[in-house]
Image (cartoon, rainbow, N blue to C red; front, side):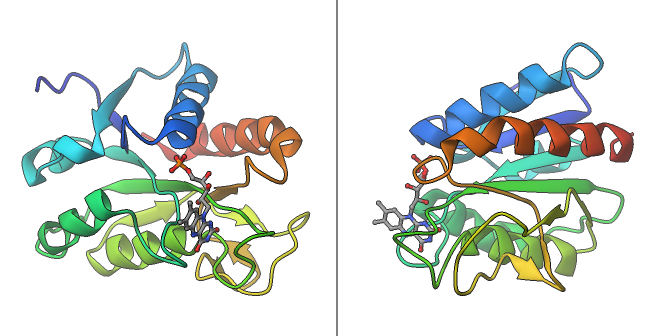
Length: 172
Ligand SMILES: Cc1cc2nc3c(=O)[nH]c(=O)nc-3n(C[C@H](O)[C@H](O)[C@H](O)COP(=O)(O)O)c2cc1C
């Protein structure tokens, strides 16, 4: 894979809703930013480290866990030095069906990358959501953009636009 951009967006190309949101994020960044798409299922350490800015697409599966392809990359991730990397995380979840684990994967990934020295950006307000608990929440903020395409699809456009506006200021 030829990396030609400073900013990469990594998500599974097979993850339907997450992939659709990735396209919307890329559109929102254009034309100021050229964002390279990377399939999380083909990811390796070299590709991950080739970007300065990273956007990670992480839906929550299995009652509060990472999808398998992200889980498989965790041991490699734990060996990386992410100092100097700026990382933003977005994740899909369903607050009605999974109110006790809403968007947990965003929190799991945030913990992993900050422990390796990355700068986490793109924290968002928890206002407007209704759930019981979430590993994505810390000090009344989400550690990324949490979207619910199943029970709040109409709120996505504005949440996403606000988030990208913020990221444009954070990414160098
Ligand atoms: C088996 C299964 C388990 C899920 N577990 C959670 C969960 O624990 N927390 C949550 O917020 N959403 C959960 N969801 C909802 C998904 O995150 C949501 O459907 C998301 O839009 C999937 O995105 P994708 O199509 O890109 O995989 C689960 C969905 C399924 C099918």
